[in-house]
Structure formats: C-alpha cells, structure tokens
Length: 216
Image (tube, rainbow, N blue to C red):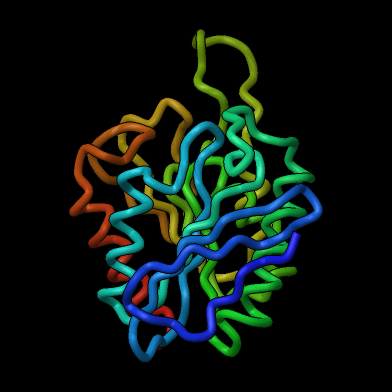
C-alpha cells in the first residue's frame, strides 16, 4: 500500500499514512516553521495519540522550535486495542522513522519517545533510528504490584541500554514505579499517576527545559 508524502512542513497538522511490514501506520505531523529538530512520539499500549500528555508535549515541542510527529502503530490503525508483540511494534516504528528521515523530515535532528509502551519502543530502537535523544512519558518500570512480597521484574535494563540523553517524566503515584536517574538520564517526578494528567503544566515544563538544552 503506497504511503502519502508530505512535501513541506507546515504549522497545520498533516496526516501521513506510512506502509510498514506490519501494515499501514499513521503519522500526525505538525511543523514548527523553521524547525530546530523533530520530536517523534508513540502512544501507550491501549491508548492513542490523543492522550493528553502526548498532545501537551507535542504543543511544547512546537513552542520550543521542534516539529512534532505522533505515530499510530498499525494495530491501532487497524482498529485493534491489544498491542502487537514487542518485535512487531519495533519493526513498524523503525519503518516509520526511516521513511520520515528519508522523505518528510530529512536532515532534522530527531528526538524519539512516547508514553508507557511507546517509550519502551523508543528506547529499544533509538540507536537504529539515528535519534539524538529519548523522551519517556510514564515509563512502565514494572507491572503494578499486587502484594508487597516476592521479586519484582523491572524494565530498567531497557533504559540503561540507552546511552543517549534521556528524559523520563513520571507521576509521583505511578503504580508502575519510578525509574532511576543516571549520568545521561534525567528523571522528573510530577504530581499524579501513570496517566500524567494531574499536572500537564508540570509535564510540559519538564519537557520544555530538557528540549531547550538538548541542542545547546
């Protein structure tokens, strides 16, 4: 299935359908005039690109001089709520970013990220996609605990594998836990839980400060 092509970046959102090995994905592009870079974000496992924190971060990206691209995975485009397995998510995401870099966003420094499961995809594929930084909203460090006993399997290793500058914005009451900071990873705690909707201004401010310093 041929994908549509955006011939220039404008301030009006443009919807681009991109073919991937997992079926068509959909990208919502907003231009920043003369962009310094682009922020590409994926959605959560059962949510979409209309999530309020994703929308707020997209607005902040534009205000900071970055174009934004919100990516709908093929399973969502096909109307399914249950996510595909991780390798298929990664494959589709990588195909989308390869096209954006080659056609629609050529030459722009790229920050990749997303909320929850979308953040995990971005972490696993950041190097292959040629990103300069990773932006994680509500990274799901572990499954919510149902008891206080027993070992907890975490996904900290997915974050630790990213050597690029990384920002994690996490709700103080997130039942999925709070990741650790590192020399390259900044973790900002904001009011609220996994949805990050309790204080969208705090989410936006954390992202604004990080993006503003990313390119110097």
